[in-house]
Length: 412
Ligand code: F6P
Image 1 (cartoon, helix red, strand yellow):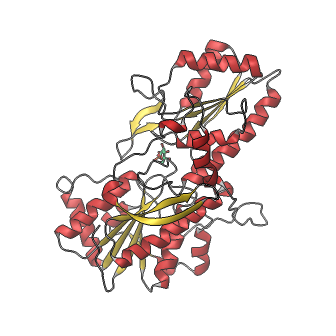
Image 2 (cartoon, helix red, strand yellow):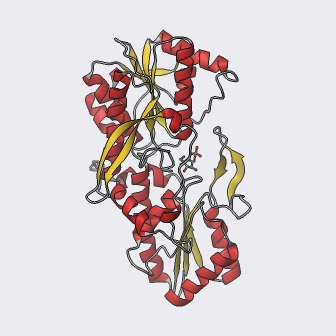
């Protein structure tokens, strides 16, 4: 972790990867903290693509009211992107293009707000600047609903998606319980989370005692066994009258293939486009067990549901934004402000710098001791970890029209 001080220059902020309900809260905190240090903030339109295309937004145009409204607005106010730069040699021309943009605008601090792949990009940009002896401090700012960033205890964006998941499963379970006698017997709810089962685990918070829904949770960390799954669904229907299943989009067979990949497409980060596990499982239950099934795939709703954001998550998102600016001004190059859990009960946390090299391209999966012995639920250890992350409600303001007053920035 090198430390370099820079007298002046501008700060460039960019959003990357899947957006969340609170990434704009991080952006708001970055802008507010930078303004407190009389530091100009440029935002890249559509992430690193905006840097490559010299398509930057001067955030000085944002009023204080706009900056405050970002705190409660989902999506990515400046546009995000999925563009993974290859190595400094393979994509040298692109990196040189980035450097040109930094020089042209006298950017001395680069804050890249994203997940694992974005941490990798921030690290590479830092190496490039060092190679050309350009005085640039690069900070990775954590964000992902997948909660799969290494080193940090949790990822801003996860807590709100986790709350959305737990509340939605709790409510759907009440619905299917009421219908089960003569109609729907099985409900399948699909969560995002890519290759890690953190969001699937969060669904477990919807139940508090034996027999509560969700009755079966399918994790990417546990090989999908169709016969065993169907047998368990049927056993719950026979014993309980109905069965609520939560399945991660990233579940795989014992051979390692995804149970359902949406069309098998790949995204720009080289990930298989996932999605479609719920209809697949529902089809199998219907065909094999003849039970009436409903299924839900909330997809973007779980990561844009700012109306159900977690207060803890919002606090995390703001804190990492503030700290990222302070680390940049201190010259803590190639670091990331990560959440450090001090204690579970009462929940206490702080933010500390971690080397990007330990985070880039790493992926944190669910630990074995968070998954119940039978592989279909969460343990007390998982509950203790998850509970504080969904605590508190950070409702957005609503207008007389009955809708949240979300900010729509005019970036033209
Ligand atoms: O990484 C966050 C995430 O929401 C994953 O959970 C999901 O699989 C992926 O992004 C979807 O990516 P996109 O919105 O680019 O299709």
